[in-house]
Image 1 (cartoon, helix red, strand yellow):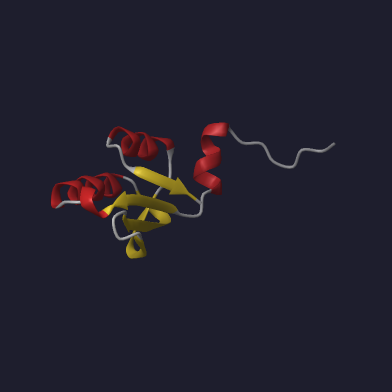
Image 2: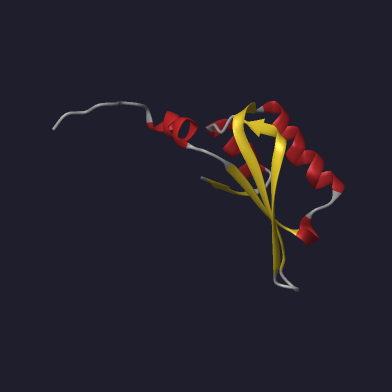
Length: 92
């Protein structure tokens, strides 16, 4: 058995992630919440695209939006801040 590549587990997310998707219910979004998420993203600018899955549970509707300008550096610090802010996310 030959090993071709070694990396720290903490660096795996950063190097193997393709996109960060934020998932949120429409009823929980307000201007303060949007500003909070935007401020977090501004602190972690990078090259990975961001997507948003916004859903409305009562009408059973979901819309997917992709940011054309905003990109982030998907790292453990960013994910920790999103967890502290109770932001649901998916890494692809």
